[in-house]
Image 1 (cartoon, rainbow over the protein chains, first blue to last red):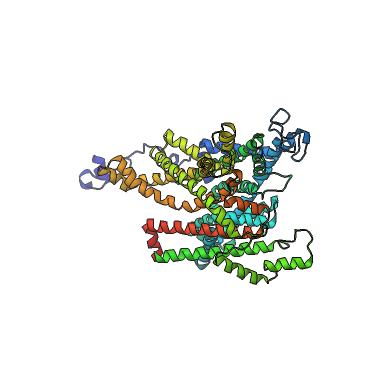
Image 2 (cartoon, chains in turn green, orange):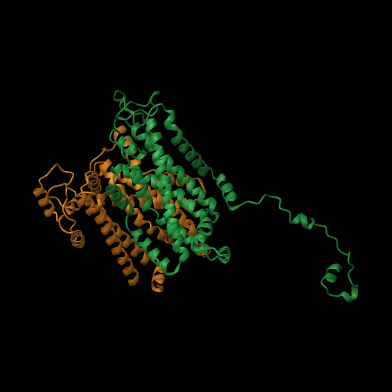
Length: 319
Length: 309
C-alpha cells in the first residue's frame, strides 16, 4: 500500500524518495517470456491439422487415394484386358474367375470398371484443371484491373450464367463427336464461371492489402502481381472449388454417357458401363451395380473431402 | 422495382439470343449438310431437298429466317421424322415432362424443407447428424444411379410397382422419387444452414424475451425469414430436374420431351436438337426470370440495391 502510493507519485514528500532496489522482479525472466515454445505453424499446416480431425473428410481422402491407385495399377493386375471379348463367357455372374462378372460381350467387368476409373477420374481432374486455368485467369484479371473492364467482364459472366450450360455441353459433344479428348474440352470450356466469380471476389479483397502495395512499390507488374501474389493468396477457396468441381465433372460425364455422348467404344467410363448395364438390369444386375457404386462412392468421397477442406481452410465458415 | 425487372428481362433476352446464335453456328459447323450421310442421291434430288429446307440460301439469310422463326415460336421441321415439326414434339412431350417435373419439385420441397428445419433445431444432435449424412449421400448419388436401383428393388424384386411406362399414378412414383432425391437433399442442407443463420440473430432473442412460445418464435420469426434464401435455389432446381428428365424418361420409357431430345441427339436430328435446345433454354431463362422477380418482391433489400444502380 505504502509502496504503491509512492510509485504513483502521490505523496513523495512524506515518505521520501524510493530507493533503486525497493522492487524485485519475481516473474519469469523477460527473455523467457518471449521464448517460442511451439514450432510456428503456417496457414497450410494449420489447415492440415484441422482437416486431420475431420473423420469423414479423411475417409474421403483415403478413398480417393485408393481409387487413384486402383485406376493406375488395377487394370494391370486383373489378368484381363478391357477390350478382350470371350463370347462364350458373356453375361456371367460374379465368380472367382471374374470378380465383378462379365458384360454382354464376355469382357471382364472388374477390369472394365478399373479401366473406367482411369477415364472417369481423369475427366474429373483434367476438366477441373482447365476450369481452374480459365476461371482463375478470367476472374483474376477482372478483379485486378477493376473499373469498367471488371464491369464488362462480370456482365458477360452474368449473361453466360443464364444460359443452361448442360445444353451447351450436349451441343458441343454433338458437334465435336464423342471421344475422351472432346469431353475434356467441352467440360473444361463450359464450367469455369463459378471459379471466375470466386477468384474475382478474392482478388478484389486482397488487392487493397499492404503486401500488394509493397509488391507494386518494388516494381512488380500486373502479370507478376496476379500470378505471384494474388492467386497464391487466394489458393484456399480455389482448392475448395476445385475439389467440389471434380465430382461435378464426373457426374456430367456419366450423364452424357446415358444420353449416348460418352467416350467411344471399346473405351468405357463408369457412366458408359452403368448405362450399358441398365438395359440388362432384370437379368444381369451386377453390370449396373458395380459401376454405379463406383460413381457414387467417388462423388461421395470428393464431396466429403471438399466440405472438410472448406471447414479446414476457412474456420469462420464452420458450423 | 420496374427497373430491376426490366434489367432482368433484358439480360434474359440477351442470353437467349446468344444461345440461339451459338446453337445455330455450332449446328452449321458440322462438316457436311444434314443429308450427306444418306445413300448416294442424284444431284438434282439433293438440290431439291436443300431448296425445300432452305439450305441453299446464304448462311446469314438462314440465320435471320431462323431468328424470325424463334420469335414467332416456330422451330421448324424435323429432319428425321417426315412431316413432323419440332413444335409437334413439344406439344406432345412437354406436358408429360412438366407433370413429372412438378410432382418431383413438390415432393422435394414438402420433405426437404421440414427436414432442414428440424435438423437446425436439433443442431449437432443425432437427428441432425443422421439427416445431414443422408443428405450428403443424396447430393452425391446421381438420379440415373438411383433410378435403376429403385427399379431393381421395387419393380423387379418386390414387384410392388410397374417397372416402366406412363399413365397411372403408380407409374409416377419411381421416376418422381428418383428425380426428387437430389433437390430434396439440397433443400434440407440449404434450409438447415439458413435456419442456423437466422436463429442466432438478435431479433430471435428479442422474440423469446418478450415471452412468445417456442412454436411462435420458430414459425413466425425464424422459418419465415429462413425460407427466403431458399427461393434462389428454385432456378438451378428447375434446371436440374429438367436435365434429369432426359435420362429418367429414358430409363422408365416415359413419352416425354426429354426422351424425345435424347432420341434426336442419338439420331443426329439436327433441327430437332437445335429447336429443343432453344426451347429448353427459353424455358429455363423464363423460370429464372420468374424466380428473380419473386425474390425481388420478397426481399426488400433488392429494391434498394436496384434503385441505387
